[in-house]
Image 1: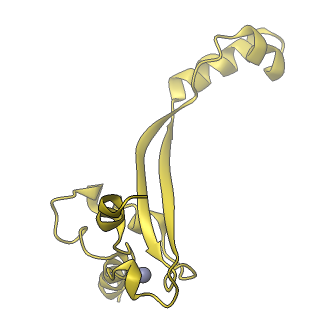
Image 2: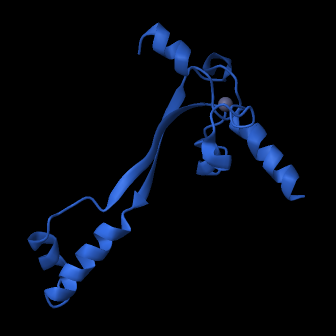
Image 3: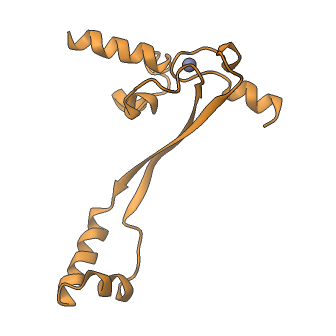
Length: 123
Ligand SMILES: [Zn+2]
């Protein structure tokens, strides 16, 4: 990873600090993919399986072998070594709360502040 890329990804998604501020010179890049199940494709595959006497594996071989899912979002986030063992909902980490609007100042805050705000809202 070159310096420019390191500068671009060098902020921890959870605490908002630079990765150089953590205890160890290590960090994590976490890829989060959200999938949606294509219900029409699943229905077609199940229908073919029923037509073939309930043999799902036979339908898998005989059918069009189409994708059953589609990728809804695909992101990578940086987590510093200090935050790597903390628990956090994946949706908060992926900014998928409140529609994930990137222009919203709420979702551009570090994830731990979003979590605290959500906990305060529940109380
Ligand atoms: Zn951190």
